[in-house]
Length: 501
Image (cartoon, rainbow, N blue to C red; front, side):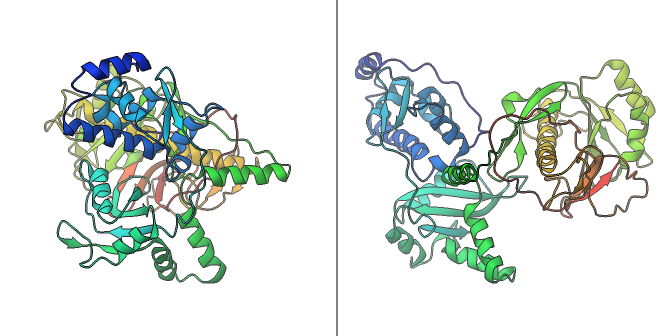
């Protein structure tokens, strides 16, 4: 469960008395063995959210848990989580019955809130009870539940954590699994025959062995090896670590302020959040999806020069449009900061007739595609779903840049200077030199091969990775406003090549 999870809106939770009365009459609650199994599954899922192995490591759940002194959490909120939707459809009485059977959780008198029965405690031996397994292929619907069922055949499982690529969040095909006891760990690692998935043998080892393998691959020794192992083990949100850091800062007489980062996007001010990998993102419910603010060009012959494309657009539009193009494709997208008028569309078609010296056709959203995201509806139209996916991608790209810029500014002088670490988020290079006002002019140190690039302007388009060769231009919206408490140090991204406009 993450802060950005989609939230469904279940019906209101009724009181204890109403729930009990309905439960006695409603066959959906007192149903057959299938419903009894669903009751147990619903209870176990909620218990997992509040368990020592998850609660202090899930930033969103921890925020709910600490929102009030008594640690009550709204049942409506919990049942809105994606993995609770199946159970929420059974009705509020069903949920209440499942929760009241829990020995780990308690429900308040009104049947509206729940909480743990015991205080949260740091799990002991968590690292030693964790294993690594690889060979699960591509992600499929219901993958996490299938993985949990698979590992439970070897013993009690506290948590299965699917490992994902930075930025794209694509499943790596590997997982970290925390078992409840060492006997389950041994049963899994010493299984004969070895564990398989879809007929293929898995690569398995303890988490400690995985750390040692990565350290050996990088040729690290001594202190560097220790730091690497600690980094792997400490990755992601950890409430105990944050409390320890806060306590240490208080003891040293230091009070850190946590910046709230905001993004100006398509006329709206949107809060930027930080995920478990310390990358910025926006919540979908905060997104202002603007229909008709995107144009698609088709027929460019597999290449495009952003500088040439933007030259005529600068003459008409106050804010330079955002361009997305994958090298080798015959099409690309151009995003504007508002819905286009007929005159503006006509201007683009008239003044940007060619891309890559080839005549292109310009289209606007027309019709709905059953696929999502980025599926072309026909040869000369593209679906509204594609425009929505494009705008979400724009916002998240800009959010990563905004969060990174905020970190750079907070850690540098007004003169700029070198940024720390690998700067620029997932869209910048190695902590390039900042200029102007504390880093707004940050750009990649790598020399561009495009002679048409003007290095005096902010980062414009990127060439992200040799495999996808995806060109993309950041939105450029600044982050504004700083208030609150401290945040974890921003972990910055892999180096990419950036063309500047």
